[in-house]
Image (cartoon, rainbow, N blue to C red; front, side):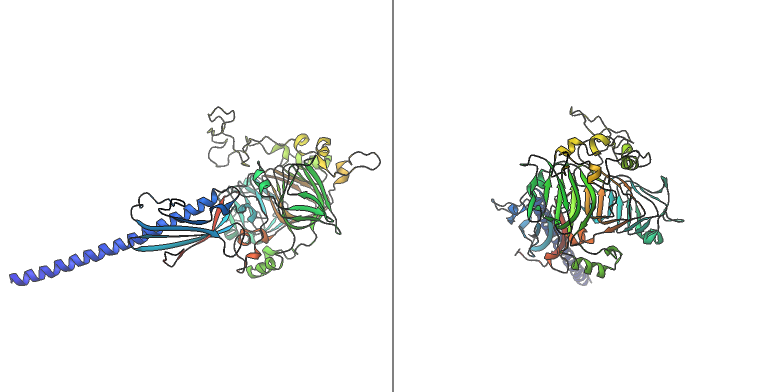
Length: 540
């Protein structure tokens, strides 16, 4: 019996020991696999950071980085450094040839277990504010039954609807949905808007959406360094890369005709004010250091058709629309100050866009009085966070809504908006009266009888428009902080799907030539477009 008991005990102990050893090996195996993955992932993020640190030349970091390589060292997580048998990371150009896209591959081995991860990373991607036909970095408002939108819209505060505008797309509001300044529940009762959003607000209306940062165009130095394009007309170059660096005047008057449209090729910077009207063609972004004055229709000479609007199509049909129109006209205006359209110098424009007590620019813009917005460290909580006098002590709770580093006051008509003689004197090619030899009155240069603005319009500050004709068509996108658009008859927003990040960053149908790189304003230094794990291998 003793021998039997000892035998049974021996078998049990041996089995238990083997089971313990098995589970120990299993857990060690799992721990090594996990640690190898985290180490490879850390190396991948290191590569992403290397790209983010490059201000102007991302290709400078192309190469292979390895643990123990003195010339191209790779930093290891300090808790795993002694366990890492092998770790390497490669940064290379996108094999598909897309400019500013890079492929990063990282591999790590711990305890004989190897894990590989890979990512497609875009350096200086365009801001996602361009994913919306209408983006307001303040109070968004659609007042009028004549307003119709085909695309998504978003605000970084409340979104106010009045008289049931038609919304055929998503609504994103950081704050609340309101109707004529009164907060409403869009999910119960009758929402204050029509269209597909009105029929299904649970799907299309999103309150409490995260804030989306706007680009900061206070300093255009980076965009000047990246400017490689030009603006020409009838074969004559009007702007070459940067205008206002060598030229006697900072601003310029630009007018295109159907026979001789303005040709925009690539990105350019104009340091002063710009007046524009007429036909434009090409693809690129015009960065403007002053105001943009829209003096009439701005329309593509070779643009796509927006009827029906692409955002009203099925996904397959929209993809086909983008594919068909990938090479047609697409121009963006990125404005450091403000955008004004119509007879800016007229009393009608001033009373409609500036003096109106409900929405006029005279009463908005001050970052000291934005009100209760739920954002930490803003005036409504009284917590000082900004140093306004440079003594190193926070003394202000004002909210820098546009992120330009300056606490803005309400807009001033005479100094910030009106086309004065001082502004005119700094604008090249401004029309001159043949009889008097003096500049033509701006109300004769511009008109309020336009109906079409095509392109992407971005400004850090205000957009003020008054049109006495209509209907108004916006084929592209409007992105700004404050907006006062007074239309006649109706206003239709038709989003240009080609500028959406789903087409700007990813291969469309596997063809990188279908990516349109306009050089749009940026917020992030890098963005990971795609990331996945690969079959274990030490070859990267």
